[in-house]
Image (cartoon, rainbow, N blue to C red):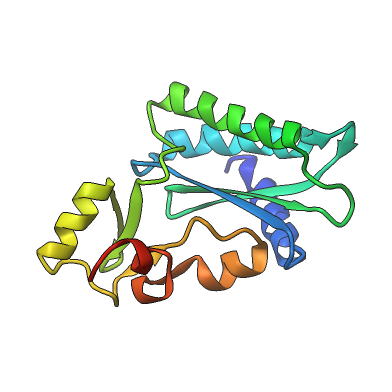
Length: 172
């Protein structure tokens, strides 16, 4: 048994108490992360959120990795708000993860969708092709990585295309 169990318990307990208005940033990998990458990334993220500050104030922060593809950072700003510099630190962290693991986390037109139970992603042109072929429709589950708070992350992040920004950009 590894020593990650207490970390996982601590994170899930923390998430259950997360303020619904907590800020959320979602970074989507263009590839599914393998088990070794996940272990390493979780350790890096744990260190990061435990030392993340804004103007020398500790941020009440956490993270979650969903579907072995999405890195979700959260900050409860009721104690201290995330500043431009602290957000820059998180982007710098994501760039470092990109380089280390040869993944792309910052491409906003890497579009994820569900194909049955599988989560897949394609670029914008690939998504348009899937629509043309009828493989993606307004009922297809997509991931709205533009949600900005924990409540919306819980309730509007994974949604059908008809209820997401995707519907405004792509003609179905």
